Amino acid sequence: MTAMARTGRPRAFDEKQALARARDLFWSRGYSATSVQDLVDELAVQRGSLYAAFGDKRTLYLKAVALYDQENRERLEAILRAGPVLPALRRILTEPAALTGAQPPRQDRRGCLVGNTTAELVPGDDDAQALVAAAYDGFIKVAAAALKRAQASGEVAATATPEAQAEMLLLLFQGSALVSRAEAARDRLHAGIDAALDALRPAEPHPRTLRGRPPADQLRIPATNSAQNSQGARLPWMTLDGTHLPSLYADGLQTVGTVNIRGLRAETDSESGAVRLIGAHIGGSLNCDGAVLINKSGPALHADGLEIGRPAQ
Image (cartoon, rainbow, N blue to C red; front, side, top):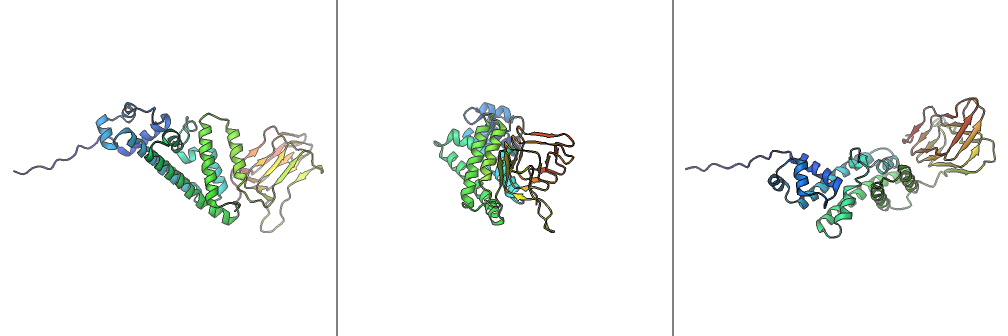
């Protein structure tokens, strides 16, 4: 008599898809607030199949966090792989969904699953602590490699090691992810992020900063006359905070960081415009809060070809 080999009954669900759905459920509710029945309902599986595939709830949670970390690290490497590093870092910090893959409408309210795990389970769970520590180390390793490249090119100041700068970015990312869960004003978060990124920029060339009334009637950011480079001045950032002047001409201006004309008042009577940023490339953001631009004979702001959020190559 020959015994027939028994084959296991195939599971009626896709384990990879189920793990991704479990990750999203834990991410939204947290570990403690998610019951096994919640998982059964969300994944549309029987309890026995759930236990057979993933073990208990805690094991499933750790697998979900590991999946989240793997996906985030792959996105981080892709974003930082080529091109200027600082604009890419700003995108990660101001648009966390670019890294976490979170989908609207709650992409900001869930924070970071690794950070949430740290807050909920660490200390107290050795496996969770090892998992989040590895995730943080992975972030630092990838970011430090990009910052090392940026220091070599002169984009980032070599005032600290790339690893120390990456550690600062980790703290900034986790902090902003936590604060964003309280629906903090995005402009305030972005201002803090820009201030931190500005600290990474080289001190030279000196940024243009002006407050109050300038001595001349008109402020011009001079363009270079080089045959190889006909674009405008290159600055790490520019601030005209509460400045009063007839006009500002900054055609071809290039900045790695932000241009702040908050509270600027420019009033003129010219066909050229009160503020000109024709062909300018601003790597960070353009802050015009409270600015008053008046021109009786032409455009108040002349900005044909202006690009924001992407510095010139």
